[in-house]
Length: 436
Image (cartoon, rainbow, N blue to C red; front, top):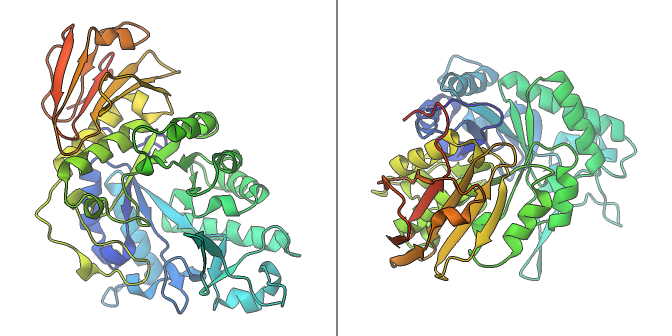
């Protein structure tokens, strides 16, 4: 399997409450590496406040006691370093979750630096909120930082620079920045610039889900290396995904995912339809430059990850094993640079409304690809074309690189019966030096 570089962003999300203490991470890390992932994303590992939520950080420089093995002779920080170093030995680089929009309402920071926090009109600490189905949901366990109007902007900026340095010291080489669009662009520009000058090779990914595409574009322009896209929710028909993709692709490449720690498990959504799980992972992996999947996706887990209550005993025995399929899809992605960049992408007429025909072309190299995907996860669907080479600008011969059995020859005219959820991956040339 091709090994990682900073520009091969295949992310396995190790959710720490499910994985357990740092000393128990190694089997999950080794599995992620075997699956062909190149980065390990870990949700916040710092000490939380009273609510216990991973995203309610009380102390950015102390570790969550739930992740510390009391029987280990190592100090907590050394346990964390050991886990992250085991990822590095397996060929994975580690992404930390960086939460700078808020901290725990009961954090000592609130009393030590009251000027850092947003206030309600009556002077009380402001809590972050969101509108869900027309209802205002307030997270009262969180205190919102006031990056824009604080009297001590310099102190707040330097504090999070120190947080980044601390996490780099634990072994992290990248940062997934939670709710990045809610933090001023100037903050990110300086943090990213100074962090990269101080720590060579670190990368920053902006979590901007739920924000308008124009705001995502402005956030990405702060210097982020990657953003996350919303392809998980695409119906394979509406124009919005390609419109968003075109709006942001030249600013920063994006990362797709079939599910995340914030969403309902895909296997639960699809009522155990394995064709649907395969379909959605294949599309996520090949649509954009990066891909991410959370722990348990490979086994069809159905219990939603929870930032407070999830525990190692929630590990499921499903009888499902998608590891071979995921490994093969990741191999295709790694062996074809076209699928590791934000390529020119168009949806073409397929002649069957149940079949997605997606064309991709690399602006940097002479490689093109067609994804022929059965949108129907319950029934087979036919696809036919007079000459598939007419769909690629170069007119070059196409080679089947699909997961599973492959066609030795692409005939003209072309006719194929796609199994439920099946996708054909056709490229104009094999990648040089590819390994199987």
